[in-house]
Length: 225
Image (cartoon, rainbow, N blue to C red):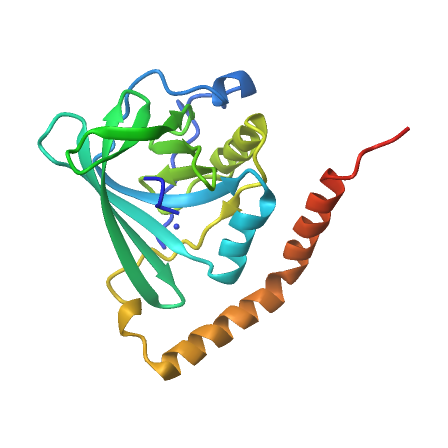
């Protein structure tokens, strides 16, 4: 799931919901192995530095979902990621191995390899939080729903602070992957339209990109008293 990087709003009543977790809990892996099969919608993504997630969201504004199916072999799953940007879609499929709160890539023999993604705790009953320590380290919040409550999002914002990642980027909630064109079939005219849409979005969001640059630069300047 390392390469996998939400409109009907379903809400839960607050009565009976678990209280938000504290920071010492949110930074820890889940204790009970979650059931991963089914569709998960990417709600928000955070990266260690603010720029990578911000650029992806502010330029492409993607919608992302992943369909996970069990392969019949214990702990082995197939994940098909669906992405949508400006009316164009593409998908990517890969296998992974789940071992308790860890998710591994697999080799050609379906054996787990590399450093695993880790599933972190959350009080959201139909969410998972995935921390990936790859070339581009991320913390991602996924839900069975296409959108989540404000309280659940605030908890995730606190969670990424707990693990010292940047403010999460909330992704596009357009989850209609049936009515979009395969990006491999894009024409020259459509490419130009796509680029114009990107430019217009950057015009609207460039201030946040500039702020991120400034914050990153300031973080490298030593503070003297």
